[in-house]
Structure formats: C-alpha cells, structure tokens
Length: 195
Image (cartoon, rainbow, N blue to C red; front, side):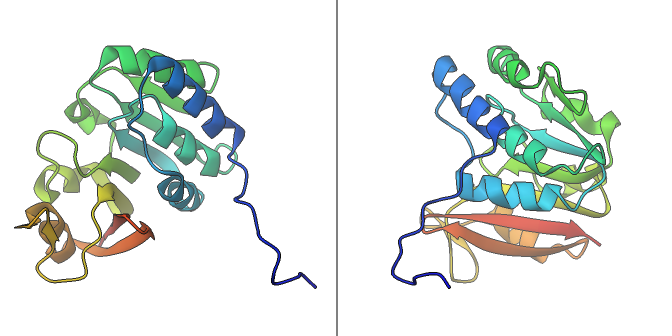
C-alpha cells in the first residue's frame, strides 16, 4: 500500500514532447500549449481514428502531444502554421514520422483535408474561428478543442471584463455538445463534439 504522505512527482513527458520543447527553446519560441492541456490532447487523440488537425502549430508542442496519444497507425495528424520559420522548426520533430504532416500555410488551407476526427486550435488564433467557419471541418462525432481560455464560472462567460462571444458561441451552438474544462488554476479548455 502506498504511503499517503509520500509526495508524488509529475509523470515524465513523452519523448516526442520533450523533443518539441527542445526545438521550441532553440527557436526562441515560448508560446505553446501547457502540459495539462497536452495530457488532455493525448487522451483525446487516443480515442480517435482518421485524420486529426491542428490550426497554429507553433514549434510543434501541441502536435507532439497529439502524436503521443495516437494508437499505432489508427490516425494521422496534419498541422497548419502560417509562420514558415516556425513550421520549419516543427518539421524537425516529425521529419521521419509518416503520421504527421506540418504545413506552412494559413489554417483555411486545410479545408480540403477534412473532415477531421479531432481539431485542435488556440482560442487566441487570429482570424475567424467561430463555429460557422469550423463546423464543416469536423466529422459527426468529431471533437474541437480550444485552449488558452481564462476560467470563468459565470454566465455569460466573461474574459478581461467583456462578454467572451467566442466561448458563448461554442457553448450554445446546437450543432455541438460542448463543455469547458479547467485544466489548471489559470486556464481552461473548451471541448465541443459535433452532433
């Protein structure tokens, strides 16, 4: 039996995630998904088959978390990064991985690659990431994961003292069953499953 007083250490990072962090440091890029969000992505990816997508690769940390959850060759991942320099760095991580493709393109270029079984994007991604622009990118039963939300316990949801229209839209759209999940004390994730 475990001693309840024993302090536990956080689980080790998957090797591919460690590589992604190393590449991010080398690139001088410090904007990436948190480990708590990453572990959620890996768990969700483990339930998916078909093609998953990420909009806004950065240096590939979120992509690495998704890849760490993929079972065998049941799914593949395509990721779009507008900044060609960052896409080049991310490609270093996945050069020899036939299940991952990182493209230096605007996210809207992935429209012809869908529908996706899981779509991961940053809630702060520039451009229109509302439900209407995303719905057709996701297959029925597919999931959309938006991260980097400030936790909110009230309705309507507020962010920085203003109604968070994006979050309100995702949580009330009848085409999705959606929930906001707090993954750490200062951040939450929205998960929406297409009906």
